[in-house]
Length: 192
Image (tube, rainbow, N blue to C red):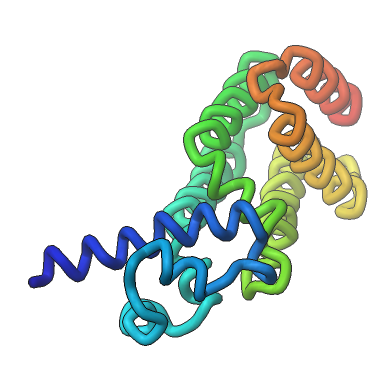
């Protein structure tokens, strides 16, 4: 019996993923999801509190991975006190993020472009702030005597997210050489 419940729950999540991707959170229809899942609205609410909870369940694993990635970035680049900056490091970071986006493309699209109206509509801005915190700490370890404004670093964090969004929109997820060169040389100049 438990196996069937898990199967129904997962079927609802899979169908909801497609509905949210096609219509966004606000326009997604619970009626359409339940019809395609061959279940009732009342049965859907046995598994999910509301539409927001269902949306969260669709993207939950990706959110957890993003948060772990942020923790890892802080550990690697702040806690260990890295005091050098190489192009290879920049290439590693960009390729790691690109692989993550490719592996979680639908959920990343949902979080970046289709979450409006949900409790997660500000998630990308929370990620920008978390990344800005890490970047501020990293810059302080790299050049402790130099003052670089949080606003500048937040703008760079927004720029990084914009690169990801543009790569998704235009399907150029693996074309990062120009960005790597630009980012590496920009930070190299700022850190001098």
